[in-house]
Amino acid sequence: MHSPAPTTTRSAVPQVSGHQDALDGVRAVAALAVLVFHVASNAGAIKAPDGAGWLYNGGQVGVAVFFVLSGLLLYRPWAAAVLTGRSAPRTGTYLLKRALRILPAYWAMLAVFFAVAAREHLADPASWAAITTLTHPYVPDPWWSGDLGPHHIGQIWSLAVEAAWYVLLPLTAALLAWYARRTGATDPATLARRLLYGLGGYASVSFLYTVVLFVPEHHRRIGVWPPRYFAWFALGMALAVLTVWARVDERGPAAALCRRVADSWGACWAAAGLLLVVAATPATGPLFLGEQPQFWPSQFHLLVNGLCALAFVAPAALAPVRAGGGMGGGTGDMVRTLLGNPVMRFLGRISYGLFLWQMLIIVVWFEESDRMGRGSVATDLPLLLAATIAAATAGYYLVEKPFQLLARRLGRAS
Image (cartoon, rainbow, N blue to C red):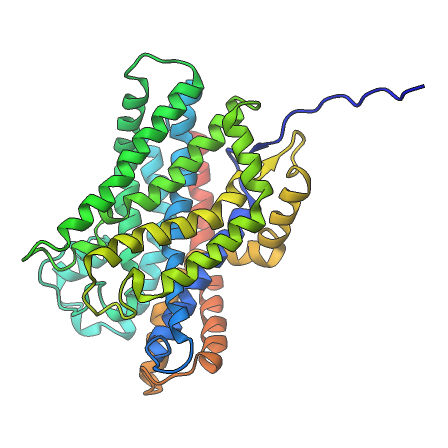
């Protein structure tokens, strides 16, 4: 006598809303990768003639990971609006929540920066205002010499790119929605495919824009303006479309693709590791940010770093979640164990602070010890990591968390 067949359960599909523990781990890895790169760069390890210090250059991939994550998480509600017919997010509420998320903690760090490293420039209201509003990459004749901004906060160029992309996202999403719907199609598969085609065009802007970097007499800081990095945001936005499409059609091609990618997490991360090594070489640009880039390495930089970030993020973003909550099967459990354990979740929660405080702490440390360019990653990194985690933790509980709670209340009220 045969036992009865088990009842079918809902297909495993990716999560499309709410908090995802594994993505906390992704944020943590990105923040730590950038921190290692900055320590090695200021210690002089990347340009050391002997050894494999050049591998530290691969830490710049962390920026691409952050941009892919932003594209995934922030575009997802707009993708859902197109594929399900829901209302799109309200632009005013969205922008207010973004401002509350990034500006208070950033301004707290800037207060320390101006007190410690830029007191003499407080009397320059134009530059001061540009830095506080994240518009300093567009200042034509600033007091700092580097293309990325003042050295003590050099990493903030990427936050300026993020902020500009946040502001542009409602318009970008509206244009993508118009393109997806312009044929009159209403089925989710057709709409999703058209969104993906539109995102392909959006990503191509970065490669076309890079040509402008090599036009004589161009603005010297144009390489850190948002269009250069649309491709990385587009990769995350494409993941957002796939996750929503899989949720809408659990037996369709998107759901099957999500499961295949999630099941192949080991192969994806192995590919990410290989791409990381390639990204660290001069094939994707100079080892030192002060050197002039060349045309093909600049294009290759966009491609390799973007693919590396995609290969790392995709298994966590597309991991299935079964009905009832938990991640589906061994694949999801493994990804969650590696990226969503308590340590990685904590580092992910404070990852914005890790990003904000690292350069100020690193540069002051090497300047005060008179070892700029002559440090040791082995001895300096543990100390600087501990100091940055301490500063990020304090900033999270004193500044970030209260404003996050305020943003949630505003979201519920709206």
